[in-house]
Image 1: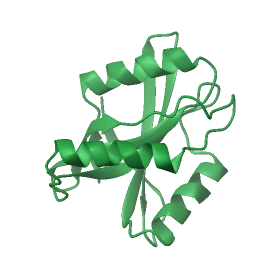
Image 2: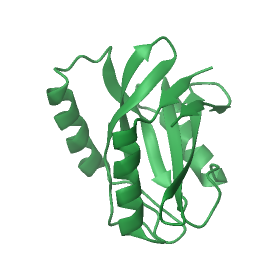
Image 3: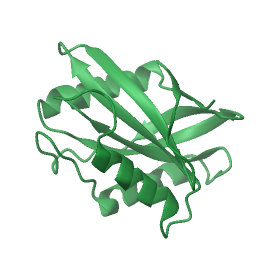
Image 4: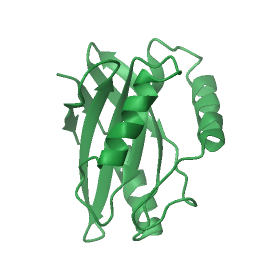
Length: 152
């Protein structure tokens, strides 16, 4: 079982972004630290606050590539410890479960042309302007999606 930790500072930042987006879906990429075998901690995330609608989000690859470059510089390009962890987006009007389109998109990410063996998907939702509801899923090359233990 893979564990992903979402620290307090990252939760607070997600809440702030979700409040600003209102009923629009937003998202980006997750950058993480491997703290133990099969245990990752979310260290940072990017946010594309302009492209989402009430029921759809598509991230801008250029915007997020820049966020990764900055992250790698800050972490000394220690790729074994700090690296791309996955994707995240909000479901303000829907459960924190991946849609059929989400699953297809993530499977094409890990089974496609990119050299990515796995990618996490974090889906978040803000309830009552305060409570962060979240769920994470792991997509692994040539394997079925799996739930992740998300510690928040």
